[in-house]
Amino acid sequence: MVQKLNSLVESASQTAGPYVHIGCMPSYAGNAGAYDCEIGESPIAEGAKGEIIEITGEVIDGTAWALRDAMLESWQPDAAGKFPGQPGADPNVSGFCRFAVDPDIGKFTLRTVKPGAVTTRNGAMQAPHISLWIVARGINIGLQTRIYFEDEDNSGDPLLARIEQKNRLGTLVAKKSGPGQYAFDVVLQGDRETVFLDI
Image (cartoon, rainbow, N blue to C red):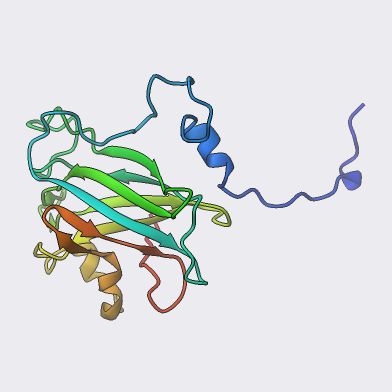
């Protein structure tokens, strides 16, 4: 017999974490064996062309606390600015990675190839960047943003040009911290809140 709807109680809204790790990163969540390796374990394979870099950072909440259950996905082109499937794209760069912050210290590390500038369909040049998607407890809809690089010319990037509050552009720029090393934090709220994209 079907239960009448007026007798059901509304349940709490579903959030991404911690359940997202169980389905998306089973080995990380302690359920090894579902896959030979995690899906999206690395955006590059041995022999990828270009400069290999590491980006480290934290996902910081409104109380300045680093979240320890955040999961991120990244998408990017290869060192020549080409995506998989495009003519001449590097076969050793998938451009996709799925990774989580360290559950003990709240830091993430993305090891990848530094992306090249991308030509859009209308011929405009996008500065080298990596797209990010972030989910964690309390985030009901994944957040989209980008990582640009302080040692690249970002002045002509069409997306950055559309951001009206120019003082916030720095929230999208990874800082050089050493040879092949960059620092980039995702700040969810507050004065240094990262620019998030509605895409």
